[in-house]
Length: 451
Image (tube, rainbow, N blue to C red; front, side, top):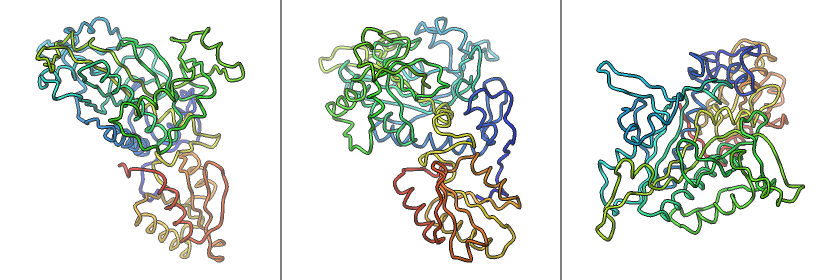
């Protein structure tokens, strides 16, 4: 993409309404624009990153054997009344009526709707196990929406639901989701710690939240610092293996890590003092096992091997796709702007022409642009007739991981400058070597082209 043809409405000044880094930089980098309190339009740069995150989530869910679908944003209130949650959910639920006076709601979650789909089409244990998921917009009418996409009213979320014959099978689905989430977060350049949490209005005895440590986090968390040494890496996991999935869960949850709702001071004090940590965390996902709570209420039964009808065991599993974008910025930025991890960057590399209109510099930039595009990468070429300082400031603000700087002086020596946004280190390379290095870097990162 050529920046002169792109829609990137960057702001030079910090917006007064932005209280945290991610909100400030998303507004300044022209990623979002507020439409109403807690509701945002996603502008092209923000939309690209949102789709990159969504792609990773889809890939890892399907890798784990989960099946994508799509449910509507608006739901009939009848199902929620049937489950008993219509009145219990509270004022966060946006309740509306259609022209015929039927009660409707803008879905904050989908347990009722997915259970109705299941009970309408599945009647035998032979069709189990089954996990269905979708990525869809949700709405929760927060009393005080704030912090941009971190605490908005409208948000983009992956929610998945497993249906199993027994508790043991459902707990395997729980463990499988934990593994797939760990892999997803690491691909996004995040370390998200699974922490014992509270079930809240969804319910369930087994639940873990995934939290990214950040000073701006809304949750107070207590953990053993040893958990931050754990990485999932590129492990080959057989998702059908109960033992392998259980082993990963035990590895990542055996150390103390809890949110303030479930914090146990006595257990925390058993952690060696030098490893006890109290910090803030940003929730980016949560998994639940809630047994037969919804299947019993909504009559989602299957015939078992013994011929008897029994309610299925269920769980739900959510990742905040739009919230993740803010969390990544909170975890990866400096005083100049965003620093995107390679796995989710909107463009793989920036090209800065120091002397637009110079025939040799223009030709070199065009050649770099074509070479990167030819190997499936997406460069952003700043071809504007702007001063070099302004071009560098824009690149730093939008946070592309790598920048190639092209100028007449370097070209006389046959080199361009390749700069890492994260470290700030630069090296002079031939144009061909710079392209090759970028190709090698991204060969180690699974990234989708997105939109």
